[in-house]
Image (tube, rainbow, N blue to C red):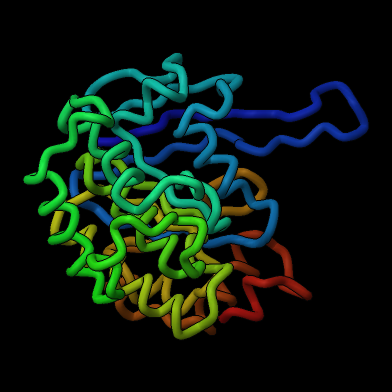
Length: 264
């Protein structure tokens, strides 16, 4: 369903700041698979997402989605099939537009209608979707998104990304900026939406406990490479302590002052 082969990306080549951000990354995902991605800061997690989303072109390698080679596609073209929720709760929505207008804008990708052709049936559909969030937003369709709390904005962002039934959903630490209680609620909403739509999903997180509990597969990155790929019984039996040990053994590094350790 999704595959990337031998992805390589180097920033600032030939300068003192040269950084090989992706180093021969190979990854395949089946339809409906939910993969959590962990790794220390600078491991290449967000760079991988940027490469998949088309924020830049890779130096080498190829990216396939649903059997199509999208390596050379512009980001706006990939956006029809790839949804992304960012850590920053202000990204992914238009804060000066209402909840209804934001959802209508996202819905155009699926319904192929103009923003100004949203029918009463569409509005009823939006209200039904919002009711599933249990945040009371179904009664605030005319409220501007910029007036919502961070958790409410992320919930709206999730709906915007899933309403068009994307073939791939990228969650880039989308709960990291939220307080623990709100993060837990947004994560529960995420799991429900992904399961309901059977959406192939990749989620970056620094919470290793959540990484092992959510989805069906966990990948660890370091220095632009995938150094660990856990699934099945091996993943079910894995603990945070053993995961930290694996990181040290495979990467030959020790975790010091790093959010990956602190969130463990």
